[in-house]
Image (cartoon, rainbow, N blue to C red):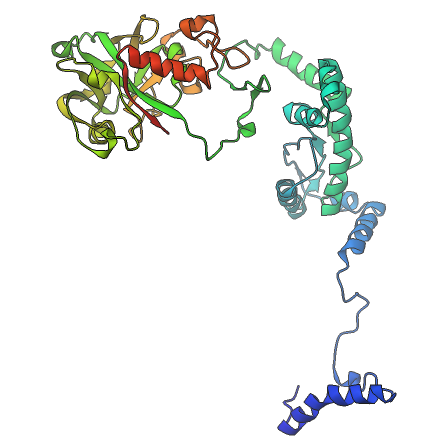
Length: 449
């Protein structure tokens, strides 16, 4: 390495001009005049990666020489097993697939054990069927039968498996690609039935119930991973009051009868017909508050508040509401009324209080819920419908509550919902429930959420 003098720099800057002049004059340029003065390593590697050509060559070399098998046989450690959730055979690979398999491939290569990665594919389910349905025209859809759909889905899945397998190979994943498992193969299904039979014989299988996410448009249950929530969606949330008919044996609420209510909050008013209880947290402090004058504020003059509810304008001389103590100031501001605390007590005191169901008129109980009841939002009292939510369901099992789910496969209220029968729970049915609560002096506030 050397630093050229200023004169050398000048000569160098004139070099391209002189070279061009000589070339124009037909003079032959000296080729590699200073090549011998630069000490570079001699290698057969190409200067360019040229991955488009090189990667298939390397993968062919690995396959022909059974590199994975030979490496695994040479390792003397214990067998290493990595449990891999199979991808859905419903389309081309994406970055999620690449990240998933590359990370697992790194682990397999790092472990100095006998590693055998057997790839697999999940070939059943809604994602595959939806992909097939989207490719059909209207005439084909009208003539479609369940058996025909399954046949088309199986054919599509097999084609997709081959495409995904080739892509995984191109990514460089080492696996036993000659022996994959497919969940639609008869051998796999037979093995599943055999294991299931063993579980039945050992008494592990029982019939139970649980709430599931449901798609009215597809008329099928959805897994948690299949749900996508729109950030732009606005729910119709309500605060409602359920009137207490019989306080607990402690007599703590006797002085407030008959005008004392439980305040609940929900973003799904359509679940109110299925209400079976109100749940409280025994660790939280609750208060009986008196609803006094309406505050003059933006919230009561058409700000974010859509409607000042019927319970606040009912004309009851002294309406009392039970809420979590920590939420009194928040609710005072949100409801736009003056709330005065008359008595405080732990949530456990409210257990077994009875209240009037706001729709069907039955008497229901206050129950003790879990730590899912907080003061982060709402009122600290949770409207509980065991037929519409996992936490509600578990609380319902503990207390033997009725499990009511008056909604059909298309998302419409059934006859079990009484006057709301036939209405869409996500549309007219939701609005009808809110209107009913307002007309029957149970609505405190309706607002977008």
